[in-house]
Length: 213
Image (cartoon, rainbow, N blue to C red; front, top):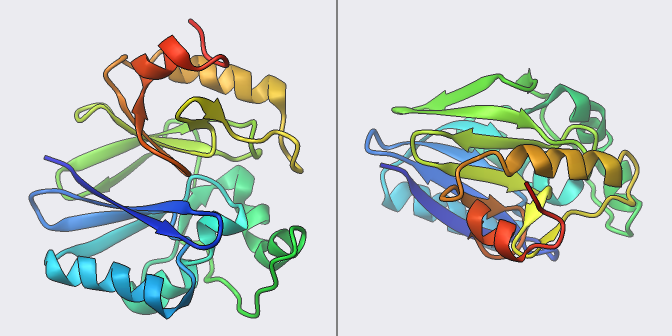
């Protein structure tokens, strides 16, 4: 059974997820933690639950989703997993942050693994399939667990909305194609987005103007 803890991080209220199962191993999704308070909250949760972090996966390379990669690496020794198509965006972390007026004075760890569509990441007793969903950025991906019907969608799909497509590497045409792929998942699939509340594929099909089958 999967347990999911949502922790809102940084000024953009980015969702960092700590995903664990009965083995007490866990996967961290999109750590955007900034500052000692956010970092300590994550450490305290992992310690109190007796978890062992095994993966730090990124849904895409925008700065608000990767800001905590240095903290995760220094605390747990985990280098981030990111799509091959967003590797350069991740490496330009400082430039991406500065493009919206956010100045940072540290560098991120070297990427541990680049993934592509159809690849898998595993921790404990669970496997997540990588689904390439370009549109918000060139290398946006969704991490989907078929067994648990859970999808971490980053900034591709939100509750009632979708990610911006006006940033460098964004494309409205591509994100619509990506959303059509996601609608092929079961309606009961629980969606955990990069910002905002969780939702489901069925709910979005019924209410989100950008989705149809």
